[in-house]
Length: 325
Image (tube, rainbow, N blue to C red):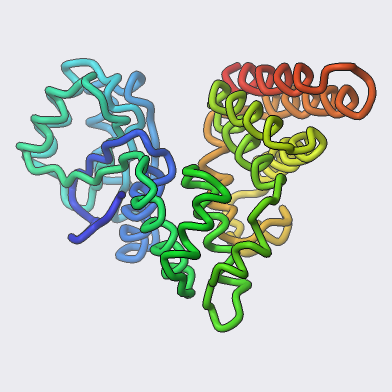
């Protein structure tokens, strides 16, 4: 899990691991800490493949309009060798109030650069997938505590069994339970009331994977959901809801508070942060194309075609293509 036992405002932070939720949280922790220290902190993002030595020098130069700056480099495994050397050099001699966050999905690509960054003094935050049930149970209990509630191990394990190992789904469920629980105590009865046997939970997982661009996982989750009795209409509803929420967020003005955005979009405040992560990579045209694909699938599922599974699968593929485009 992405945990921090030291000051998150290190000059250079390397977030390593394939778990998107934990990676996003690690980046957000640096931005939050920087803005707590200096509210006018400027935040910018750039893809590793697009970063040049000159561009890096520009990004780490003090801003005329802010006293501090956070620079997030996504997919740092894709940087060119000369850029990697420049990142290492910057780590050794950082600029005051400039905070670099380098996001790496793990694996062997650019491992030498990662090792050099570590030796140069970069703070490493791990964002590994939690594949063991005990890890997922511990994650649920930590999420409930963070939301102000309490949950014992049997209830947490029951929630994992009901939802599966998807961290976004578990985080959403844990937050919802903690808020709705009487006196903040989440027990097995409450978990069963909210989630056990509820097919719509599976629809949410399909929708989340689809809008994130993980088409293969979305199709896999779809097949499992349909095999275990989920009504195709529930999956269509989850897809339509997810895309509408992204479209509303994309069209919202800048500078609006999360609480106000949540009210306008029709989601709880914590969901706004999730939506921001999911929106990355989408364009207005892509969202429009994906919404049309879901509308066509909705017509097919509700009687316009004989094979609802094929209609849903095609919709997931088209959503992935719309996001990629």
